[in-house]
Image 1 (cartoon, rainbow, N blue to C red):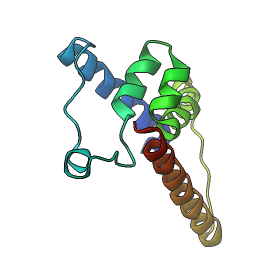
Image 2 (cartoon, rainbow, N blue to C red; image 1 turned 90 degrees about the vertical axis):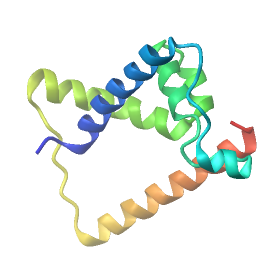
Image 3 (spheres, rainbow, N blue to C red; image 1 turned 120 degrees about the horizontal axis):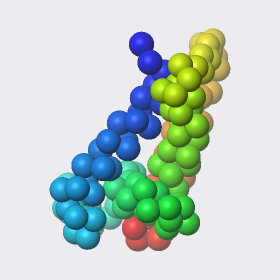
Image 4 (cartoon, rainbow, N blue to C red; image 1 turned 180 degrees about the vertical axis):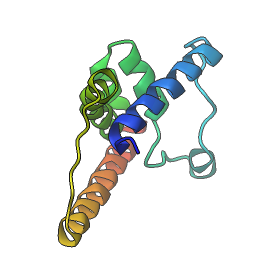
Length: 122
């Protein structure tokens, strides 16, 4: 089974390419249901715009649209290159306690990202 991060990075590139081709890069996809219902961004709002900005080389814009997604893609891209170009994979094994800490850290990062989106009205 391929490592999770490089696989997610590859799927993200494929998905964003599809968005660009299907919308011509000008019209974004419709707002998410959470945003439509509440008028506030969901924790993942701005991901498509951030991905498109990354594909166009506009890292600062991508960070503004969704910092967590942008940092995740920038961190995963070298791993994807190593995996798909050279067959190398990052294999990290964590104990139960470390996994709990990692999940707590990820939850805190998602919450901080959501607060950023709410504050900036993304």
